[in-house]
Length: 96
Image (cartoon, rainbow, N blue to C red; front, side):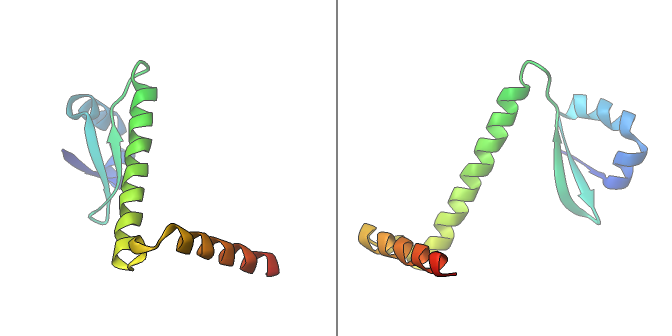
C-alpha cells in the first residue's frame, strides 16, 4: 500500500490517479499520520464498495463499544438492569 502526502495529492493529482488505478488503494497522510484511504472503484462496483465500507465501519464501532462495555463491567448487566438504566436516563431527560 502506497502512502502519499496531502501536498502530493494537491500537486500531483493526475499522477496519483494513475497510481491509484495500479495500486488500487492509497493512504493519504498529513504530518506523517494517516488521515484517509483512497480506494479505486468504478460505476459497476461503487454501490457494493460503499456498502462494504459502511458495514465494516459499523462492525468496528460495535466491537469498540463491546470492548469498552467489557472494560467497564457493563457486559454483565442483566436485561432488567439495562431497562432500569434506560428508564432512569429517560426520566432525567424529561426533567432537564
